[in-house]
Length: 223
Image 1 (tube, rainbow, N blue to C red):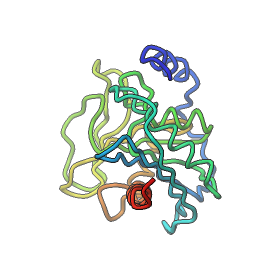
Image 2 (image 1 turned 45 degrees about the vertical axis):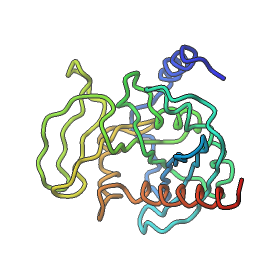
Image 3 (image 1 turned 180 degrees about the vertical axis):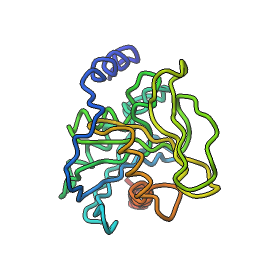
Image 4 (image 1 turned 30 degrees about the vertical axis):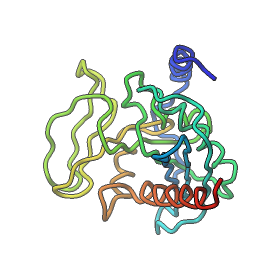
């Protein structure tokens, strides 16, 4: 297992490979949500990947995997806990997406290398992060209307690492940041499109649902 220092060094090295401009297909067809479910009673972790039609939001493919956590809880290194189970789920996936939406962060990370960045580099696929809570960065209050945006800035207020986006009027915003092969603006546009009815994008909602189902089924089978 990697030490904490080795994991930090790996993040810093892989960060140099990030592409923070759009390298998406001109006609986006398939978009995936990934999510991880932790068991409250054990060290089990479930990873889920749901591939949706970008236009209809119909689920086209699904893969889940359950295993024991292999990396300790260390703030800023969550991707090392979550990558193994997501990569195992990826191996089972019958249909690969054009873009992945992670329940978490990308560039909006203390070392500019959250889960969305890590997954994008390893799979060589466009990724973005959509977090429920702020991990890193400062922002000004944003308007209450759906689609309102405030830049998410590094603490020196000079570097934009993402956007704070209100996906539904009067509801808490989400925190959008690019992972790999996508720009901040495009990532924000896609999250808003995917969150037409609810606070979270449909990709995240589906992956969360299937991740919880996978954990329940695994435990029910006594595994």
